[in-house]
Image 1 (cartoon, rainbow, N blue to C red):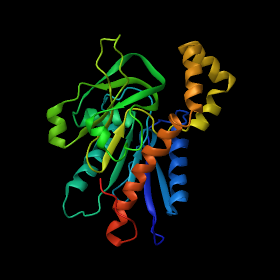
Image 2: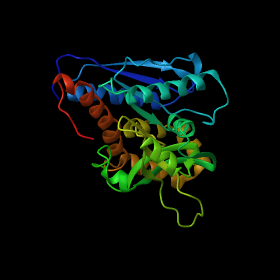
Image 3: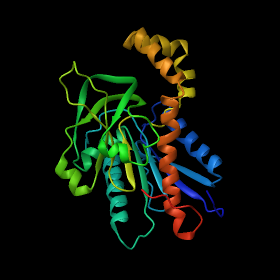
Image 4: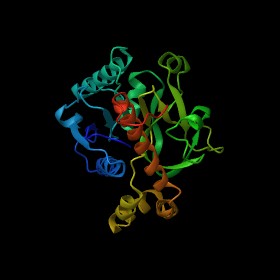
Length: 286
């Protein structure tokens, strides 16, 4: 990438409500690594959405909204209203033809579920049991063509950690918004339940996943090898699940590959689209 010291400004929406997590560390690490790899001056600002009701304005170039705990179904809280206003504001900004440079947004897990509810794209319900671990995710017809995913295998492997699920996509709402369903969860022939929606391209500039593409295989491996975490996971999910996770985290073609592709590709695309008009970044066609 070429650049002339134009700062690529990123807003990180922290949805963790003060709960200890690995997600924020991973997001910051990916953004920093992107700037170093592409020789791009990157700055990021963190907004504590749920505790401090902080929401970014439209002065940033790209936005990453994290996962988080709890029920994504709106309960009428002030932070929810502010978050939904942010979603609509960004969508409206991008639809205004006078705004030639668009704003780019990546939604992760809890943020993704809330966006699906707000834009009435699908149903969101509580799972029978928590989905936790490493799993294969399958691309749809649109997913196989989406530039964000083309360098990943089909299926590709992801880290999942959620109590809720997005199902029953509303095709009319998808068509009205111009959204595309990109990925579905693993095939479970022995379970008579609809496969969850795992990724959506809401628009040219907005994409989201129900899984955690920011998951850092190396950091997670170090985290899960701790005696207390091993004991907890084994007690809750069994030794086989724990051993599978450790194997998948060690495999460079699984979680490491997903981490290295999805959000970095989002950032690369957002950067190039933002600065293409000034001739300081190569244009990638999406």
